[in-house]
Image (tube, rainbow, N blue to C red; front, side):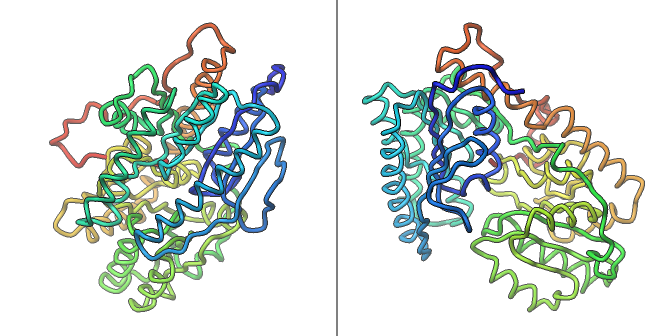
Length: 433
């Protein structure tokens, strides 16, 4: 329901990692603020087929042409310098329409705190840090054993961002703990807002048996394909299932793009898996819906590393929204999200690939258990994880900063943490954002 508040208070959201409205979390945040009566502007990189300036469903989007030369650390440095300068220019252009009551910056990267400090000094603008990722852990996961100087620099940028923020919005309790313990942010300035799926939009439709390509079962993956995302492990799992165990009845559809996509396609072909593993790259919403409505299981092969262990994986919750059981490595935040809707493989076993493949086959060969897990996942989304359960805590941050409420609202929209009381010695510990 749209609020009757006049749209007099302006909000600016900065995001570098993805264009908007493609960034689902940022779009949910922006539309929530819009519906509450705020005047919302987003500054982000330009997406395919989108303009430099556009109005989408009442939200102003100012976009810059992205520049990502690649080439390791130097390439990232150039990309971030370009993004910072382009963002600062567009924020200045947006400011000419009037001051912003609140500026929100989303990471990665942790580079926009100087802009926030400038507008705080100039306009008394409040700063919200939307804590999507852990950049130091991201570096450690992508470049294990790499030079320590970039790591120290990332920690310094993160610390400066935390110190600048009036409020921190973290995607889960693990990230909130980092904000408090490493960032020295008081707990009353931290709010947990999970990136809950929209169960009205993400739900199973009519299956298309042709997407199984003549096989009995379909296992689906949707997500980014970077060094830390485990798609290389997924290909090893498919190789083990098809070529070593001789299971010819399973098709894999691996959707998404990223830094490693071309190398992963080459690895698939080298393993002789082209008939079993389809890798179409980034797909349309219609194709995504069709695949997840047809699949028998959703795959979350994220390995245990410093980032994944404390991150919430959106794909896991999206599988659950479609009523799919999930196969995942046993990571703390994955257990928080999925609970009994997932079957877990031990990432510390002698052969994690074989352990994951065993969990996958056991689930596919037990349709009653698979259906029950799918129902549990859908119920968790509807009753606890959906954005409608998260948005009140997010909106409360803005209402408090802008003085629109007199009574503080709940600090967190976090659902009961099923794994919170697990002893750390009992298993591995572990969305982002």
